[in-house]
Amino acid sequence: MSVAFTRENDLEATAADLPDRPISPHPNLVTPAGMAALDAALGEARAAYAQAQTGDVQADRMAMARATRDLRYYSARRASAQLVEAVAHPRSVQFGTTVTIDREDGRRQVFRIVGEDEADPAKGSVSYVSPLAKALMSKVVGDVALVAGREVEVLEIA
Image 1 (cartoon, rainbow, N blue to C red):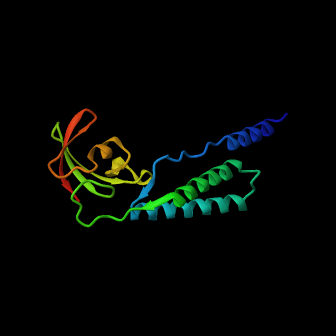
Image 2 (tube, rainbow, N blue to C red):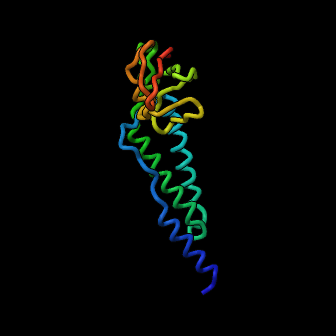
Image 3 (tube, rainbow, N blue to C red):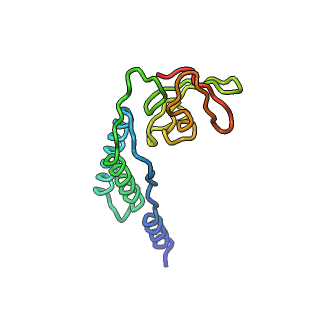
């Protein structure tokens, strides 16, 4: 048996075992920006799937497996997306709001509460199902919440 034949079988097995991307059990709430990003990702997944189909499927089974997996994921996420429009002048912390908090150690942080697919803490957005967001939901300016065993104070809601 040649090494090339063995490698081809390994790639086929790997492609066949490519796990699906996990889909959250929570409602798929999205902001308008999140919906646009979801639509763009679905478009990219469709294009990647079409590209994988036009190529030699036998030669690149992994590309086809990735494209199929991503297309399934983004199709399901787009189908279940529930658009939540922003409130003009929010009085309390809710989905889509931007919250400024003060931590016990003196750090001031600003987070926007968004859907799971659009959350990126490094860029200042957290999922509405995150512990931080859950602790802040329904709070108003001046309220204190307990986050990871420490108090945070809500300073501003926008």
